[in-house]
Length: 87
Image (cartoon, rainbow, N blue to C red):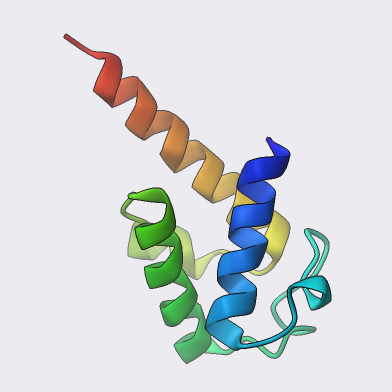
């Protein structure tokens, strides 16, 4: 997982929650950051816009921490890239 992707995800979470970026780390879980279901929806929209991806609802429901969020975004970005390379 690239540092750029991680920093973009951390930034999107901080922006959505209106908290200092340094308060969010890859090892933070959503409970520590006081992220509830409404916050999660805002973060998903922010990430979809940031990375130009679509995050499936069923996948989003299972995410409980920042690391899982980064891993999910990485998978979707990779899948998008693979789809763009097809003739």
